[in-house]
Each structure stands twice: as structure tokens, then as C-alpha cells.
Image: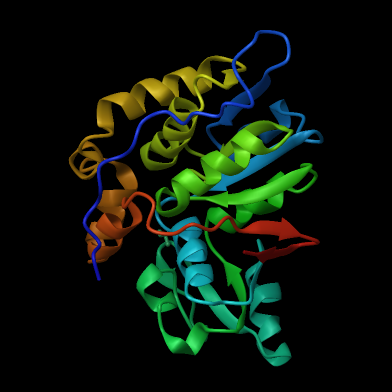
Length: 256
Ligand code: 3SL
């Protein structure tokens, strides 16, 4: 399987919705879930992103035929789903939870054993960010693996957008910010940035986009995963547009 990070494509075009000040949707970026209180999401589509690795895992799982993923912030609630026939999945501090069926590597979600299955999923940051986004008009899952599909979804959708970066335990991280910057960059002719976070993210993405692996080599989570010898996940999670799916949260359950 090809996992080499690909080169990104440019801005999207949509002939039906040209930029015209006044009737434009807006896009904002919440750099940490701890800042969610600053945003009113009732009318927005929220894109939750945790590039390394929760949302990359979720997209991969759906691309391999998983029926649904129920995200949990709470570990014990997730564990309890086992008796209902769910696969229990996730991590704390990057390590698979004791007694769970699977951890948080995308490579665990590519086999026939996940096809048609329901997964209960909990992670240190990604599923916490999903929990905090509840109350949004719509919640979708973003990653570089499904970047263009997310961009198209936002372009043709009627709502303004908030990208929520999962970060690490409330702190900002580079990889989620880069994803936010990629979305802002691709929608630059169609959706207006609300404040400076989307602009900052877009600038970073412009600097990083041609070699994200090297740009991220000193980042905190890349170093953390490297300490756990989880190197191949990093290249894979930085691959552009491997899948054409957009997982969406409906009544607490993610479906593709
Ligand atoms: O925090 C999360 O949601 C995880 O993606 C972190 S880890 O990559 O599994 O360490």
C-alpha cells in the first residue's frame, strides 16, 4: 500500500458560488478545544481534526467498511460498549488501552475484521474535541486523507465553518493547525476568514505544504509518537486525498 505523502493540489473552483462580499460564508479555526467557549457553533458546520491520529484512524476505518463509530470522551463508557457487540478502540497517551480490542493506529483499521462492524472509540484528544463540538449544526471528521472531500463538502454546504483542532491536552499543535490552514487555503476564493487564526494557519500551511514530514519533524506529537516507535503512522496520516469520504456525526454516532 502506498503511504508516501503526496503533493497537495491548489485552490478549488466552484462556478456556482463566486466570492462576493456580503453573501459569503465564513470560516474560523479553533486552535484548541479549550477555546471552544469563544465560538457559537449553532449555525456552523464543525470539522473536528486530530491528524495524529484519531481522525485519520476514523477516516481509514470508514474507507475499509466500518459501519459506524461511536466516539466517547469517557474511557469506561467506551469500554462498556463491548458487551453490546462493539469493537472497543482507542488510546491514552498514545498507548492502546488495556483490555481494548484495538489501539489508535490507522493500520489496525484496514482489515476484513472491521468491515461491517460498529466501533466504540475513545482517545486522549480527538474524541474529547468531538464531545466539545456537540451543539454544532453539523459535525464532520477531517484529515489529510480526506482533505479534498471535506473541502468540497464545505464549499457546497450552506453553513459557515469552524475547524476545531484537537491539539494535545488543551495545547495547540502544528499538525492540526496545518490541516486547518490547508482547508482555509483551498477555500480562499469562496469562504471568508473570520479572524486571524485561519490566516495564521494558512500561512503555516503555505510554508509547510511541500514537505510536511520535515516541517513537523520537531513537533511535539511527532517526537512523542517516535518515542513510542510509531513512525509509519506519521507518513500515512500526512498523505493527501487517499479517500473520498466524509464521516458525519448523527445523533452521537459517526457514519460515512
Ligand atoms: O489524542 C488523540 O486523539 C490521539 O490521536 C493521540 S495518539 O496519536 O494516539 O497518541
